[in-house]
Image 1 (cartoon, rainbow, N blue to C red):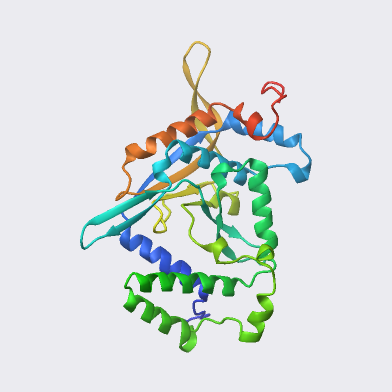
Image 2: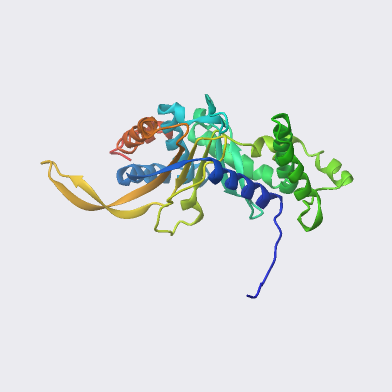
Length: 315
């Protein structure tokens, strides 16, 4: 066996490895693939979008975030955190009012980072677009290793308050010794870095856990023809979504007489994963029903995209 390269985990990979390992160790995942016939919906979206200037257009990624947040409003129990003690078999589920989306993003430097998009349940499409663009702007001024180390440090402190002394001890050894030592700014460089106002850089507040995770795999690889089968739920969240790319598939339609026939349609696959300790499938049904309603009612886009004076037929 010939090793061609060896790369020790940096702070980003340490955080991802730790969180995903905890996810698969602790959480009983349930996965459901929702496949929406989005043909008419996306046709109206494309036509309305084409009427806007390039700088005003809305991406499919942002539209998908809006669709999922509307679904979560119909099923608020999915937007929650869990606290479960396996030894004592005691648990608590906290339903959260704000919908804060943990979303993996490819930042301008090419690195992928999960960013907390705060209160997206109360934002319009334009506000969502502005928020994400501002995240990308602030990322240009951000030392991600420093920001992620602060997230990890704060998580360790929280663990100490919960009595997780052994976990904190091993984290300290793993991050501060040998080849696996996490490299952060020295005192002088950090002082200079902290002179950048928080409004112009990302901080731990932008990287801490949201209330749900939405990973748009389709936006990373638009030519892929599959659909995500499963995605990890990051504790203490109880729900995660993976969005695939729009693909052409046979769909069943009915003509004016009510007879069924097969057509080629545009299908948007959305994988829904939930923590079975906190939710049963019946809790997810209102979310699915809301998405069915949205995709079967393209005229809702007129309101979302600020085109109230235009009819769907005209679009």
